[in-house]
Image 1 (cartoon, rainbow, N blue to C red):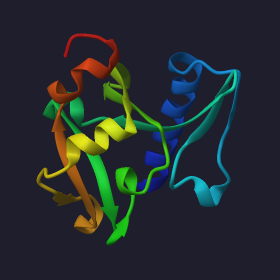
Image 2 (image 1 turned 90 degrees about the vertical axis):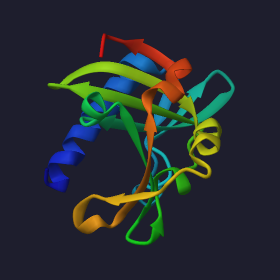
Image 3 (image 1 turned 180 degrees about the vertical axis):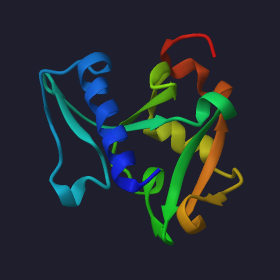
Image 4 (image 1 turned 135 degrees about the horizontal axis):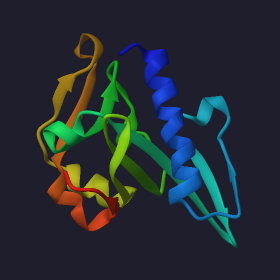
Length: 145
């Protein structure tokens, strides 16, 4: 799928996360130069939290979460994030079948010492595949998959 379509797809699930899965008093999208590090800054009372939102169409079939670490030989994804939490949607036929809310520090610990794979456009992305059962305690909504 072309990048512009992926961007529309991702933005849709950012809005769903805000409207259905994150409790907040106010939110801010970071300036464009900070979008590589998190998607939202959430304020709830005196608490400030940063969120990264991911939506995955392949995880339903593979039962793996794809956690990006590098792109074009630069830190990206989990390696560069400033987010406190990852909200991770598993999508099937344009429907949400599972949503995870995973503390970023937990996710970083889980991916340590796991095999790094290459893929994406021209195999420029490096990532770890995590079986969904590894993070099952972080499910916040689910349908049967």
